[in-house]
Image (cartoon, rainbow, N blue to C red; front, side, top):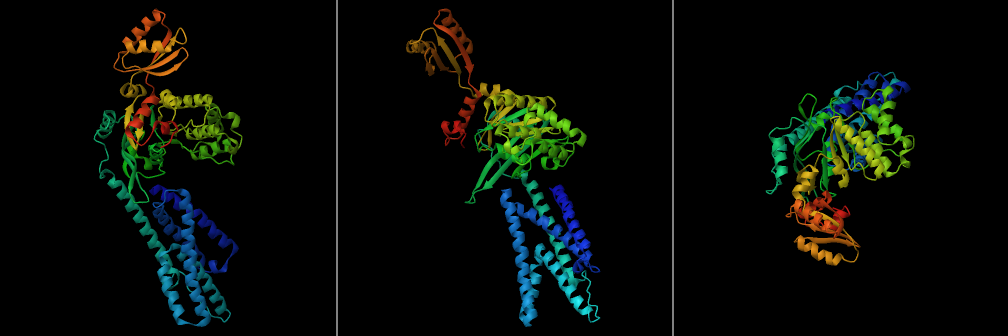
Length: 548
């Protein structure tokens, strides 16, 4: 955050310097005469020093960048124009009517409005113009009435006011940031009493420091919001998680489970209410993720849920821009961009405007941007959304190549096929908490409910008779599907898989069935089971439709 403020202030000096250059070039007498040019430059510099920390303080009240942008413009406009009018009009009328009361009102308001940097800037420039008019009139009578703008009774009070305001706002922001970090470990735990054993072991592993191979570490990460009734709602509840180099970790959950909120905290879009997100550097040190973003040794790639693309630029222009941001030398940009396009099958569309892209093609471009610079941590929020099966295979291959290079990948997806194909470990989130964690096979073994047995009979029309025979052989078996000569049963997990195969082989030998298959409960079925088990307000139909 401190680095961001320094960068903004340094960036502000560019337009401020251009303004001074324009004033000097056009020789505007009111702002260039004697010491006036130096006073004008100092006004612009101190205005930025006072305003930028103030805007940072206000940013904590907004959750939407669009609302913040409009609010910033409105606040600056109102606090600047209205205060100037309220002081200018009494001064103007007092000069015409010679009313002392209006002069007193002007003096009171002038001192009261010094708390607004916008007023200080505008009033300072107007004062320079007024004094120059007064000087020109007196000069015609041979009187030199020039007043040094740096004197306290001139613009000196404005300079001091903005310097003090900037320092106070800056210190207040630093204090608030320090308090937010210091209180991360002082919050009441939200952990349930019946936390899953695997989730508990993962938490214990992190808190005990057994994280030598972990690249990304989340310590009791939490995010809360307040609704219109001022009631606190927890979107993420004390997540403890470590992701190793070369690992693809999958986050599964219904819409609103907290997956995208975790990504926003990892990318710095929002701040956690408690806990810390850490990254292990190449030297083995753990640093906060907000500090790591300014560290040249750490590269993070991010593909957001919604494509952050400009419809009026081509795919090639996007890649060129982001390659420059990543610090890739200009002579290598064409080679790097071409390699990414080839890996994701994007070459045919790279010279077209993004506005003409399909949803799947936009996702491929977003992923290509995330892969620039060989990131050490790759965050993919539903990357294959809208992609055709062929494009998915290119994506999966690209992700595996990154994993082979030691990249730690965090993936969210609604495709169970994608999770089983890519993820070495995954977790299922419900209501902001991890309900299980482990490899896909481990989760199916722990939470699966039996086996799915599919039979192909020799004759049609004997399904009802055959169903009774099967249920006698496998007590508790339930018929799931029946179509012509195909029967599908669910068999309890209490029955040994070896016994199931032996009985089915005997039936096949007797020519009762043509063939059979035995499969374990799918990951999708486990996901539905856990989601409905821990949230009684959600039905299976809503899960299939992807509703929260």
